[in-house]
Image (cartoon, rainbow, N blue to C red; front, side, top):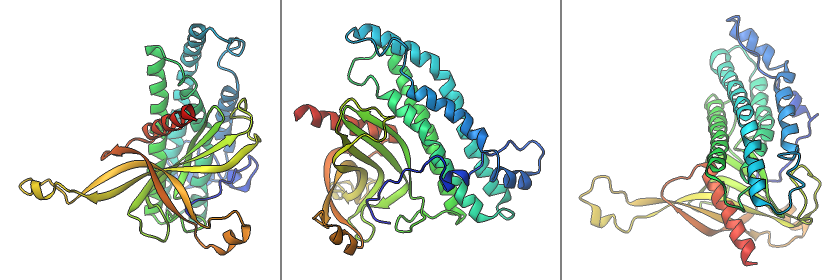
Length: 348
């Protein structure tokens, strides 16, 4: 698997999705048999509430919202009412998905010796895919009003939506790491079937469609070259031809190449280490986080034959924003990236 991967959309009737069954509640105490059954049946338990969520996602925030053209205060009021109405249902959906993640964890830990590893290995990627509509909903909802000042109560609800996204992201990351510790999943992105990262949402900023991915653990920026950089997140940014296209119109025409941005860290020498020798906590290196852009080096042409003969693409890292020594949350990092994109858009 190369450093820049082609994003393949899994269709609703794909074998990968049907390989996953919604996990049933373990009420009888027979954990092994329940886990075996839940890995093969009951997909409707997961799909039904997610289908309802998809309807909410595709619907306008309010019946009159689309007709509103310039009354910003009225729009904000409508948005506030819409968020209030859906916040509780979104939280219930989060609890549902978190419980399914717990079930998958328990199936591995409590019944690993009795369940086929292939079934377990197929269940997690499918569950990650099933969670994508929820992430997309939170992303689109939390970015809907970023161009206008928000009332305090609307702002606090936006923060809560981002917190929901962060909670599920953290839980899925821990789930994948647990499966990897049991050698059920591989995190090495050079392997074809690895689960090195997963999608945590898609949103739209004007003509830009941003898809966000989270790496389950720090991963070398380049697969086979030691650059000292380790990536934790990736954003695929596509420019759509029609600025009026919305997230649900997945067939929107893409203009130009996809641009890739990364959240990375690197350990740099601490120039003040010598002066701090008396301080036992002083380190010779300082970890620095930044957001940067993938800059293609090889192959440097659009010739398909050059890509076929190139085993692993190589690229430089163009640092655009330094974030300090503390790792930002996935939601905070995405906010930084969106602000960066918007600032570039206003200067064009």
